[in-house]
Length: 110
Image (cartoon, rainbow, N blue to C red; front, side, top):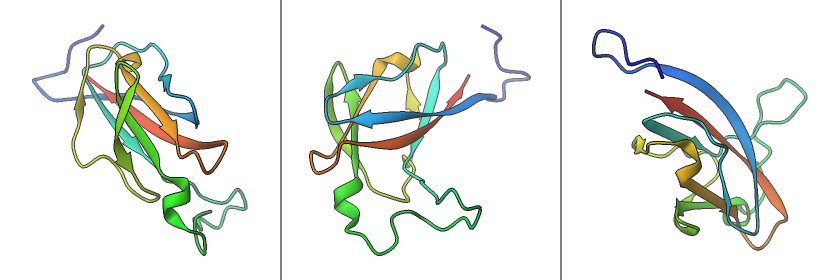
């Protein structure tokens, strides 16, 4: 893994993961910090949220470690801090029991 340049953090990968009702690990990816976001927009190019006019708690996700998802992320939110890890797969996510799945976005840094 390439170290940061001149002591500055580098983002190197952003992607998404479909969170389901059962807790699942994010993909294996060596990194040191992660941000999670629950920003879903319509596929029509408008940039409008798919959450407009719906009950936001229905679409929350939960995240945590070792299969224990205890931190909540509501629609339109990004984690307010970088999550320190050695590998992205240390983070587990799941969606609300009220829906089958929802998409969570992540960015990896080192």
